[in-house]
Image 1 (cartoon, rainbow, N blue to C red):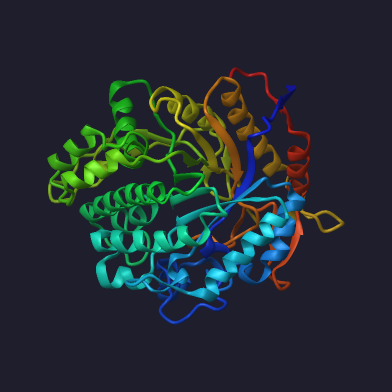
Image 2: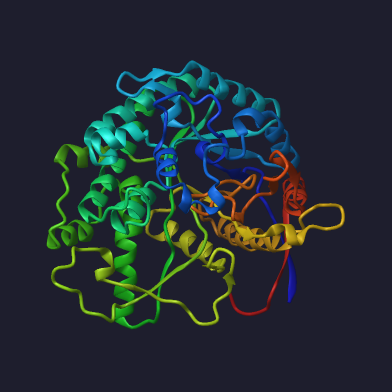
Length: 475
């Protein structure tokens, strides 16, 4: 074991992220302003751990001043959240703004500015208005792209003079993968064509908002936040390597390539046609995507995804699903977070860094989410009532170290953002696994308490140095 210290560049982000729906709660929400997540919770509350969901969340909408003070105490340089599309407007067709909700964001930005924390705003973090899902089929309809751009225009006009870093989506692949590819979430459907249509319309929406942003002449940048799963084959055998390439094609490159390169991978289009996955797109769509690429990407990185070549035959009557080309593989003896069921392997950061340099022309990026969710954290409380989350400190340090090594090597990595600033609600798991630097006490009026990691993060920001202990095994 050896102790190492590495400098943190002055312009390197040390922030944290959250979303509107996971923090704000429903206080002041008007009839007809449900998001997709709100509707799912109302239809299927029993699948959310202990019944907790977005109704109260962390009550950030009422406690943002207290929470911004805690952001400052934790040493955050940046904080990313979303504007809740479903609440920002009173009418999604005309884009009439809900002034009460919009003023809340005015006030939040005032508070962040007063405390020296730079805001980063995302326009959609699963907050598709429920009525647009019911009326048009959500992102399956090009009409929804038009309505989203209309909403984006109002949001940018309101805040772009104050917010310099914008992001169109957070994890745009997630909702349709859970709903329409794997049928794991309400409304529980399986249609690969619908999945791909949602993918395409979100790529198109990204390009159109990029075009809108640049036409507006606003200062700053416009990007998007993706969640590429660093994918490793079981072995070096050609069939396992091919399985990993296919997984990467369907789940990672389907958004990475349009955002950064301005095009879909030709192999993806060929396979979708080969398997008769019917989705609509036009030459005009592809031209828009080619002409309006993002300025930067945030990458959400949590764990590696391991796959192997499929060992079973595909039934001829089974509709196409990307698992036609792969099966999950679990490496025996891998290091695990037992609470979340995810492998811990900081090398994912080094791998994605090299990929951004080698395959994407050293495109600017940053870690937009990385964190460790632990169940029953109260068992780590000391006599003074503070949670001693050394496991989280170690997790952050190991992943941040890889990002800083990449930066030293000339890779265009611009920062690290933790998921999350406070404990917050997640889909289905609710508050089961805690991710925050700040504890949210659900039994005591959602009282906030700094964890050990919060003080450590502040010291990290103040010193601009990371010190950690590494084993001496080859990296």
